[in-house]
Amino acid sequence: MVHVLSNPSFFDLSHVRLFIRGLQPQLIEWRRQLHQKPELGFKEKLTSQLIAKKLGEWGIEHQTNIAQTGVVATIRGCQQSGSEPKVLAIRADMDALPIQELNEVSYRSQHDGIMHACGHDGHTAIALGTAYYLQQHQDSFASTVKIIFQPAEEGPGGAKPMIESGVLKNPDVNAIIGLHLWNNLPLGTVGVRKGALMAAMDFFNCTISGKGGHGAMPHQTIDSVVVAAQIVNALQTIVARNVSPLDSAVVTVGELRAGTTHNVIADTAWMKGTVRYFNPTFKTFFHQRLEQIIAGICQSHDATYDLDYWSLYPPVINDDGMTELVQSVAEEIVETPIGIVPDCQTMGGEDMSFFLEEVPGCYFFLGSANPAKNLTYPHHHPQFDFDETALAIGVEIFVRCVEKFGLWMNGTKTT
Image 1 (cartoon, helix red, strand yellow):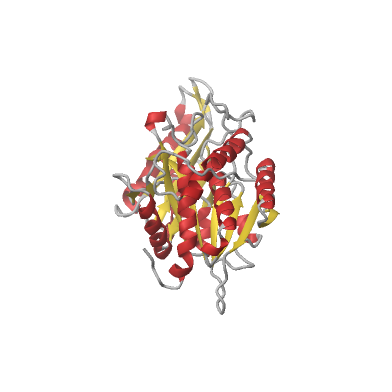
Image 2 (cartoon, helix red, strand yellow; image 1 turned 90 degrees about the horizontal axis):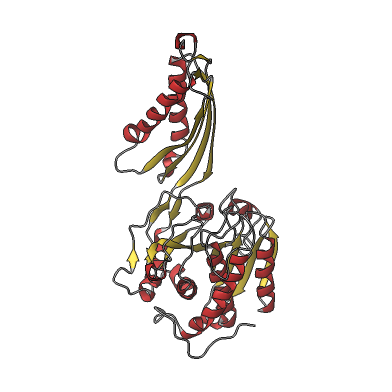
């Protein structure tokens, strides 16, 4: 049972309604429970059990074991006679990372080598708080809300399997929203923008095969190190000379290995890298251009190559209308000197993109850093943590989006 405090007092929550302020102790408790028991992608069994237990206690209709460990809750608002209710989905990811936590806090990870180092524990807690509030206030909104607790965002990706399992159907989802706690922004700010927010994520492995030999007799060899070095340099021209300066893209070689000692020319070199871009028209371009460059350099040196290139997530593209909805809500809640931050694009990737390819929606960043509490470590750092004040702010934003959603979909924009 959730206990709501009557007179809470929390920093920077003046624009959060009293009921949600009263949920803050429970939001923190749920988040810390999840933080202590982190689980990797498609292994979120304890997490799913906790979610299902809470939903069951609150009498919320839900399904479990979707795409292995996913959970979907359905909450129906007051139905308007003569009209089919619009359906808004809220997505929260649940998985952790293979990182050994270095924080010395009472709620540190109890699972060796696994840590919630990206805030997904907070996302899940916010979604639980939203579900509880909506279930208690079904007369305050006219839409149907599906809350999607998704596994494996960090990889290999749980959004697509959940979509294939039908989470956007029965009832059919009209739009979707989601948030990411963001230590790149201070507490009390929201990063939201129309169009591309996060980048596509492509990866590649390449093996360069030459002919080894003595370091003093290079004319007898095909030096894989020389070939690989030329490839690394040449790959940087893809963005510099093939992509418009008005577009943004990145080609990074993150690993290069070859050779065993000083005087042996290596016959094989291995490289791994990633490609990031916002513009969906680049979907096949980088693969083709990267292979052209590798093939050409290898041919000029009589070397051969084996390239494995794959796309993990497409770019996160926000719908204009749904972004306006989220921004209008955020403007009501965050009134710091910074407030709304439209310049918040990142080359990081997110499989929320698959949901946004299916239905219009908005993914946004909720500022969670607080230098005064030393909560500024970046995402995926072993000392990552965030200001938990953001939890109630996240619930408030989701709830207000739900309340406005029906009118928004019908073309009536409220303020």
